[in-house]
Length: 216
Image (cartoon, rainbow, N blue to C red):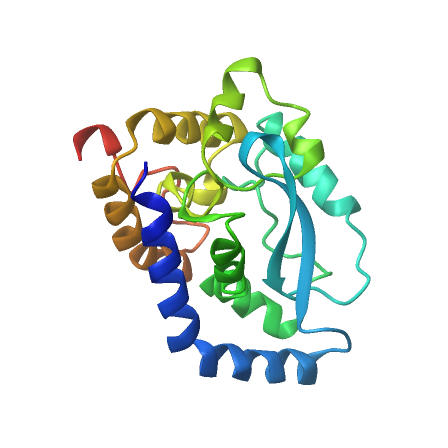
């Protein structure tokens, strides 16, 4: 994986420059949409279980409680989906603009800075909360051998239609099968996956995988 970090630095640095006007516009829109800062920092667990602050564009009302997320996380680990998904279709904490930021994944753009700092990678396992990590089985900790990613197998294989156990299995698979080509493939599949989410309706068949890395 010696080549992974230099690639992350170059691509993330270029992306921050190219996307700077869009990100500046989003800062203004977020501040106009609801009171509070444009950015939201959240404690996540990184490589080898090291905590770090993950940055996002704020998509919830400032000061919203995390109790709903704790409940959703419990359902996720206990495999209790809501209408084939593990994320509620309606969350009263999410702002008007926040709904679109989340559906398009634009709220994740500030994580490019986490990549530059070396806390994250462009591609890797989903960065989890500390209370989510406490529910890991011993085999799941193998995922922490690499930096968490902005995108990954989970994001292009079903996202919130997958249980926590399925996501963690994909994370471990990613670590074991990593190659630069796999990262390129996941990056290439990320935009189609986001567009697919935008077109998604509850009646559509869920659970189909968008990528089968074993056949790459």
